[in-house]
Amino acid sequence: MASTPIASRPHMPGYGLLAADQGSGLKPWSYAVERLTRTRGYWISTTCPDGRPHSVPIWGVWLKDVFAFSTGAQSVKTKNLANDPRVVIGVEPTEDSIVLEGVAKLQPDPGFLREFKAVYAKKYDMDMDDFAEPVWVVTPTRAFSFGSKGDDFTAGSTRWKF
Image (cartoon, rainbow, N blue to C red; front, side, top):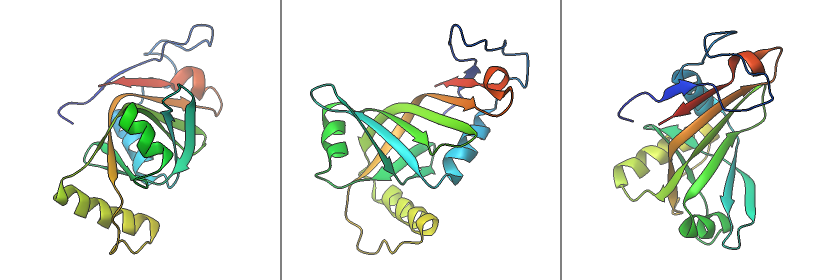
């Protein structure tokens, strides 16, 4: 990522969000990166060709400023992304949710794929020697942090634009 995304409050009329300089303030992008890196489970939402949403749990890794994951070449996710590459990634429910919006593309670079396999194998304690499924990378366009503990929702919710 060439530059740090710009942080602001999400636009959520009626939710009582405080001004960016009030409450706990805006979170730094490093906060989201830490959550995206350490989370074990994620949710991916894609759009079916007929417009229906498709949302399922996945595993993935934050690597080189993108979210990387794999899915079967014939999966619904792959078919949906081939039709419409816009995607939403969410970390598993926690006290502070991170939501990543972006555009997915297949990653053909052998060097990246080697690194993906190594990081993924370590994170999920998996043997990736015979791994041959496609790897997708999501380049973020926007991301959000929404707290649910105490006043963190109104005082700490953050939106990042890339």
